[in-house]
Length: 192
Length: 325
Image (cartoon, rainbow over all chains, first blue to last red; front, side, top):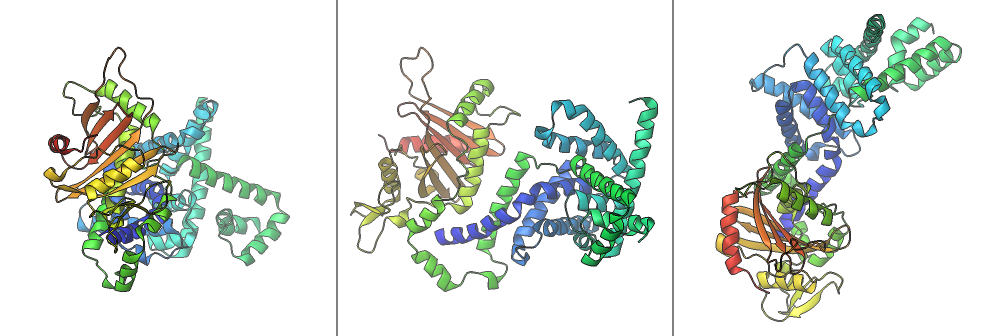
């Protein structure tokens, strides 16, 4: 019994060492997909357990975060097919603002008090600009900029051609810039 | 290369480090002579950084982390019970070799690993006491409603880890030997020390090893409640003080007992005697029994998944069967 426990522990320890450092990243993506914390938590747990079960298929040295996110997205798609989850609401601004706040709170140790106000304003504008993008552009940008995935990893994850991702990132950033300039102009006019 | 071509085709990929060596050379030539496109590249990278910073990573709530770790432990155990892929089962020879490996050698390797429990200690005890004094209502069986007790969280984390992967260094297997002698692994002594020639008795041998390490040997006896000792472990906290872990297992589940010294413990002001205190909590889905032993300045924390009322009954039964000083 002791020997079995130790062997069980080896796989679990390996998994915890390699995969669990990406738990926050997977949770962030799950929140963006599920759009509510309860579903995101379930999705995260399903993803971790599935990843553990198929951990022998993961090649050490490759991008574990991309591997975990692939499992997350597959779980998410399958749960829709099975009808066990409802599609998130089309309007997402409120949830995006909540995410922004959570992200800021998680990072508050790095925020100087004097920067807080301006930081919040920038954060809010970024979220507004992101929300103005179509879901495809926003998803590609977040996977590249926040999750640090390569274009190829995003293409594999979303099951679209590499050129499509390249185009979505390029176009998404251009639209972001336009949206931010629009927001800046609007704030300039109202003096805020 | 013209500016428009760079902006439309290469700018984003350049900022993301996605250009091929040939493309990098080509854009390098263009940027070398174009201040406008160099500025665009800087702007693109700034935007990328802003998105990263402001739409960044969200931390997993602590209770969700605990839940996932518990589920992971269950999954690991289920795999052992029914391996889905026979090809991945350990070979018989490997298993036998592992079984033959001296237990204390494995322990020595394990001892070098960082301890999950290490961050808590005296400060944690103080936090526990604060939580008790601040949060105990008349019912006395619940931890403060929405409050978090770091020491309890740490104890649950240790319980979840040990429940699945407990590596005893004073287990029953360490005591029985071919020549009939009984051995124990005792910290800061020879790796193996002969302590008896009598037949091994898990309960007494674990207690004896704790005594050798100057730790309380009056360990709980949950036999009446249906739990047997899986093994004991002597470790050290971050400050070097010893801590013992005793794992009990039965059909109903497992119990982990954690015992450590808190020299700051003092009797309430004005008290002429303090015989200790035992309190029970239902905390985040776990049952916890907290005991203070003022005589030796020890704190004991029991953690289990069993319902709190069952833990109260089991501890009451164990108190009857406890080995006294």
